[in-house]
Amino acid sequence: MTVNFIKLNLQDVNSALIDNSVRCFENFDAKHYKNAKASDINYLPIYIRVPNITEQIQSKIHNDIFLLMQQGVIRPLIIMVTEQWDLFDTYKWKDNRLNLVPDFGDVPYSQVVKAFTKRAVPEENITWLVPTTQHIQDISYLKEKGYRIKTKFLQYDFFLEIMKPVARKYEIKTRNFKKHFSCLCRGTPRNHRYGIVYDLWNNGLDNQGAVSCGRYENLQESKKSNWVSDTVETESFMSNFLDWEKNKESFINSLPIEYDNRVNAHWNVEYNEASIFDDNFLWVASETKKVHNGVYITEKTWKAIAYGSPFVINGDNGSLQYLKDMGFKTFNEYWDESYDEVDNIEKIKRITGIIKNICGKDLDQINDLYKSMIPILQHNQKILINNTQHTDLINNLSETHGIDK
View 1 (tube, helix red, strand yellow):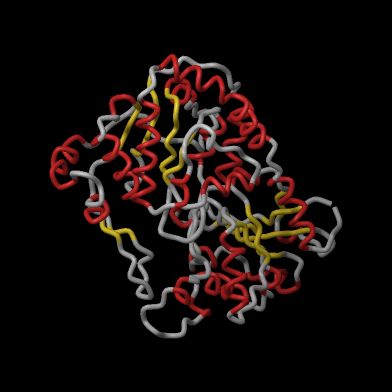
View 2 (cartoon, rainbow, N blue to C red):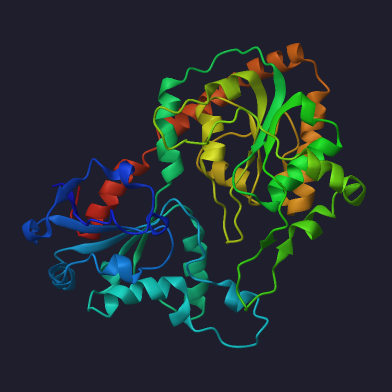
């Protein structure tokens, strides 16, 4: 028995609201809701980029579909796998500066579920795809508080999935490097990206690597919630680095730094970044690292694995352990990976220390070092290629309906 996706036209909905993962699910059979049968496995896929079912999206769901969802003939499938968000806002209970009891009805999860339950669609019939495992910890925490989460959560890593075809096509072999590392931070500005580029620049290492960075902005990163005081301005963040006040003007004037002037288009199947990894030894993955809870790994890390590159991760604490739990190997036999367990500033300084040590070697030594790493790199690429999340998803969606696959 196949899993059917009920057709829902969201083409004219604001693209900022729509999750960009449709292409991962093109192999699911598409059906018109009028052809949905109770004996089939039918899901209404709702691709949302933000944890909110807007009026614009809800208006696209025909009333007859709601009636079929009330009966369980069709079940809602919320697909939100290209962004990481705090769905349960557990920080309101943990770090509560207002001394008020939080209202669970106001958290993003409850607001999304309400869009269906107010139309008599049972909460337990809703399945939610998310990119991380943070929901497991959050649901367990809320259970202790007396809250019961009835929807079924499944993890699905969009960025891992889109890098699998790249990994299949790329053969890992010995290289002749031109530079010691690459640290490309030209995309969305983030404090930790400015921090790593400045620390490399201030240590005179930038010329030994491929580096990029956008123009300087004084950001205010926070959850944007009155429940917590967590705002971190770029200025205060950067003041933790050596000689920032003395070097600030000179560094800012050096920006932006370009690498190849190509737009990052990893979602394009024809986009080939092999030359970056063929030319530069160590990949510094300056991850998305939003202010939301949990470990979030994106293409910034997966592409290093796909292209057979050693890497460090300037991202969420526990990122390396997250990968190890999935069966990947990291590089603790080559450098100190304790950076994965410390705060943002110290993390950047320790990563810079790793890069400084690498830059102390000549390129012939680097080529030999890479050669010794090939077994680890091949192992990681194989784990990526053989990841079964897509077939697991089909099985899990079937099990929701009580059907033994």
